[in-house]
Image (cartoon, rainbow, N blue to C red; front, side):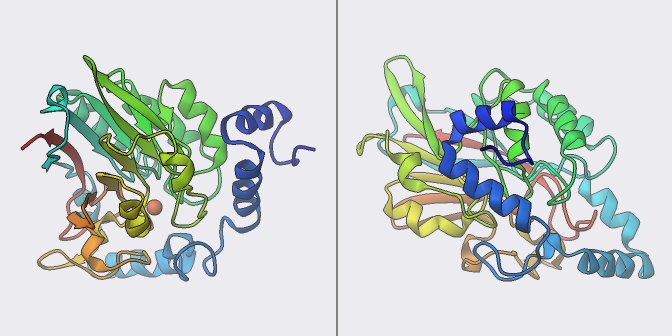
Length: 317
Ligand SMILES: [Fe+2]
């Protein structure tokens, strides 16, 4: 019997896409706990769900006269280039470029999506990937975030992949896929160039919903193949490395978003070492990159931590 929170048609669609167990687990957490601050997922405290925290930080910024500057910084999106050397990369993929848009929180400000769409329109890349968090809030309607995502999608190339983050509802799956974005819900796809192939996998949110499944995501990938994992947060980095992935692209931390001078994050809001909180890192032969985030959440402000879109250039040497 489908739960009352999903209409039967959506239930059938999602059950086909995810399987009933994954669907029931995620839906149960979403319905019962989506606005909880404590006790879900990989870390204990969820500031993104905590209204009082948001009000306190916003009030402090207003009092100190920093609110307007923080808001301007949200729109100052940088294009960051990252070279990834993979010695066993097939020659056909040398120079292959992945555009990563992380944590866009597209309904953060009116006009933000058009601003981002304009920025990505002029970039050169082979595939684009979204690493989750399309909505500003962790609950409520997703329709403005989905309308905004369609605006950005319209300026991207043909091949676009995505995963869900801790701000994202199951109800986004169908609209995202109907935009021509391939969502990777604990699954993988093959990328081909000539006769060569590499593999792109993605897991469901590991941070709050904890519905990530590396085994399912990597099951179809041959041992010797180059494999890239999209995961919303870096928190499963050790498991991903031991599972044999070559590269992991993630976000969630926003690089701290509001940082001390020198870019020192006050918190990365995750259960993992600070060494994987922002930028390039590695673990047991797997390379990783944690984006500082394209959008902003909790409060509409950034300091000492510019937002970014990232161009990952894969190279053989
Ligand atoms: Fe997140």
